[in-house]
Image 1 (tube, rainbow, N blue to C red):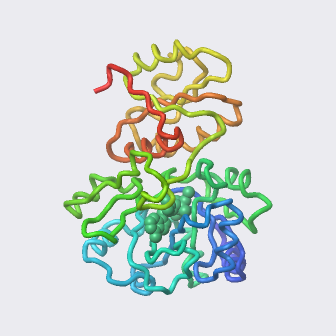
Image 2: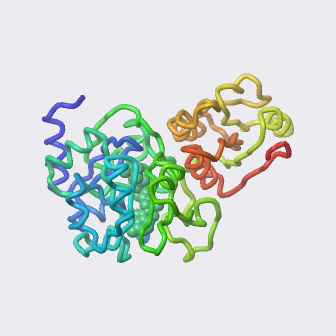
Length: 335
Ligand code: TXA
Ligand code: MG
């Protein structure tokens, strides 16, 4: 664990308007003082992030919600109480306290209370909220290790705190409370099933599984290509037998399969496992590193065996579908 000196150094840099990449329980975040518009501008610049894609504001505790949001629905409070601190972000009406640049001009604000001890310690030392998108160049797989952050952002940021590999491996669940019914904008480790238990009814935004036209998306970030390595990615669903048969027609240079641990030796093309078919948690924590490795291995075309769409598997499926720009092949023995 980190020394108090490193925490206070990170807080000093952030207080002076600098950028520090910090570990969270989901992925690494590129943090800046959420109340400092110049610092926020630096985030957009360092990531090459489109200015119309708003940032999440990370807060230290429930007491901060009413500072940054207004008209907080009871259901939102229930969800926060159940899953905070943790991998849940809620979109609420903004109180107007956070600068417009964070919310890309929207009248809403996305709030999250992370559970990672390093992130919490920095928030406590700084005593201000932190804007923190995933610490990667825009469009690339999110960074889930300090080395990924340095590869993408080295030279563009002031510091990174190395907290080891990210535990969950994919970004937080985002739920919007701006409409009458709560709406899932991005699936994550807090699963749809778990949210339904608390809220009884939640709509799944169309953009979770569909490519909508620019301007239609409720979550602005959803209109961009995301999470992608340089290779062309195709998501393939079906049994191992069907996946093997499908890949037999794809044997050529630069073709890779991203597959399950259980099938890695059985495929007719070069293969890298991203986790176990039996544990979607391992697929979540392995998926972004595996996508990055595809670049290092010089892959030109990648066929990814799709996970089950239940639990956190639904979130992994969502990330892979976007990284494949919605190219999905359903093999015929698939239900
Ligand atoms: O787990 C996470 O959420 C990580 C860690 C670092 O906390 N952060 C993260 O941030 O994934 P980012 O910027 O990569 O993704 C934020 C997502 C984007 O899809 C963005 O469009 C959406 O949240 N978002 C932010 N503010 C919003 C708002 N006011 N309304 C709708 N969507 C919003
Ligand atoms: Mg991101």
